Length: 362
Image (cartoon, rainbow, N blue to C red; front, side):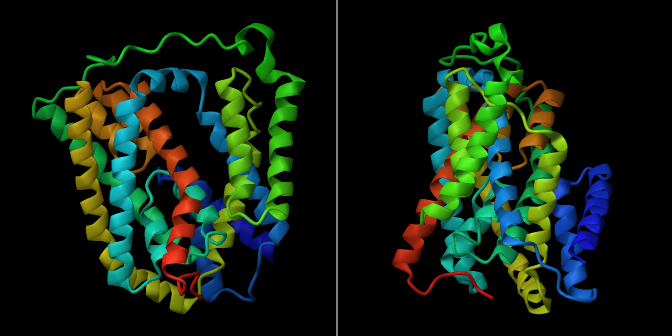
């Protein structure tokens, strides 16, 4: 029965992909699994070891985005970019706490629902961090959908209003130098050592995930190992696309099968509070973009797309369409992604200490 749900989830993902829905390979299986759980026969489940393997593979895949070119671009803009990331992170925590109070949720679930820029990873981590994965997944993808729909429209308005973006980085921030990674010389990336590094980091994450009593280890270890290796000019080999898509299908199925009728009703009620708060977060990100533009003299459209709270692929595509600096948009979005992933376990731990009754709801 689990295989039948997986096959239906793949079909749902294929359909959503052709409809250009964000994160289709995770959202499709999630929606199909929710419908199966509510209306289908039996109660399928995803084996725990399959979940853990999918999490480790996603951690390794996330590191593929952190290329030497991205690191070079960030080097020149790191101070301003980090300030913007931390401001938006603080605003997201505040909005998440307000959401938890309004929707009568525990604080960990409320905050994880609004952490920006790492939707799939936050859903993966939600159970380990003692949040309600059903609500976290619903609110994260609601946020992602609204940002993907609204942010390009605002960016286009900025251009037509005279805030035209120009390619390149201006003012205090120098353009990135061409990367000089040794992989270009000796074919490292396609060699056996690179494949051994990638799969070794996955196995290390699986082992430490069982051996260490710290949440998110299974995902963070492969990510950290491969990002560090990329920074040293020795990136891991990219995983085959079908493996990554399979990992997202597993995570989507697992999240969707947690739902029941009561959880669906609760998520729907919570969404009524979430929508205006998501727009408030977009407004805050616009303010941080203005700050980034004034401090670093980056064109406002580029700064806005870099600070938008989620939808990396959509923001990157919009930056290319509008002539913004796509490299800088990608770099700042990825910096926020990494900061959110690294900070999420510590934020959840702090919230659990300050509110001992908080935890995953059923």
